[in-house]
Length: 470
Image 1 (cartoon, rainbow, N blue to C red):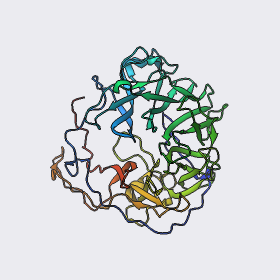
Image 2: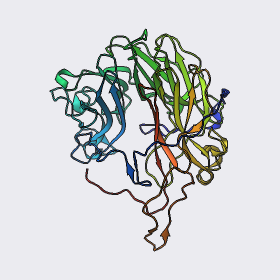
Image 3: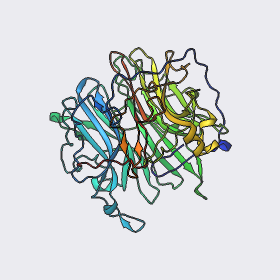
Image 4: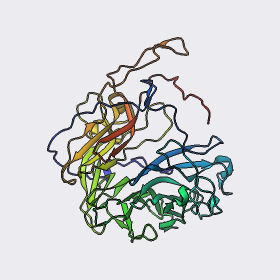
């Protein structure tokens, strides 16, 4: 697996145990997309122009975006992002001031008109502009940096923002949750609650996610749930030991949380957890993980029917071969799942995995596991595909993984092109494999299921990112 926040963690077959796959009652077919949001291959867009969400005026980076819509006011939306501002605490990294490098902070933005326009938080002495207050030094908190945003709403129009707080070169780190309210329509964030704050150099909290039970018929309405990965290292050598998934809940709107517990059972090597609440209040958590001797990872699921008090044993939805960094790119990728529950209780989970170019399977195969067969073989014979599974019985059984996108659903535009060496670059094969990364899932109130992902194909070594205004 690929870790986050600077942790490059890949799991060996020697430290994993293969999990038993669950039989699937039926198989789903690939989906033909209804439309393309934005595509240089297709040259199409459903909304133009793009709407600027953040308030950055200095070309600083924003990434790892998150978004939530108020279930009782669809015009109200809250977004989050890692916001790399240039004004920061006076720390040093390898002799370089953090203010020169820019650092990650917990950025947040909101809209009251369904996403048509966006604004900063209401300004007050406790924080600056679009940053969550009380986490990082710059906004009155104890940590150098923050990030990994996740946002959710309860049934009373309260927004909740989960993130991380950590120091770059020392041990302190925490999971954070902040509650946002909208006095006079402007978003104001309260003081954060720190969860599992630690100063131990052998513990690192990472990749948290938040969910809130906003369902009116649920016995646990407005309960706040947070999951995250607790990376554990050998205190003597610094070697990676394990990374179980931890969980807490709050019954007082995020003011306090339960004692953290591990919910991943014998799946001790995990990352990328995603809590999802069903319409009856059943809580599901999905993540990418493996047990001690497995040759492949799996997308795992556990469930709780009592508001997080007790949990089922982990169930493997499907094996997967973790995707590898895409050729000629400079960004990290992963196979973390995204999931959603429909109003009728059906569950959908999507993830990316390396699959054979010959389409022989959409599930994990050791032939596409690059840590077993090597990167060149995977690059030649496999590609990263977004796949999904569905459960109609509360997660007891799952369909065999099916591709989210039908093969060949794209039209290349702008070809042929003359390369810098005067050779001709023709259009890529429309039926050839396309790399999918970062899938997402959502189900609307009327039951429509929406699955999406970034898609792309690097077809030339001279392809570059186009420059544009900040």
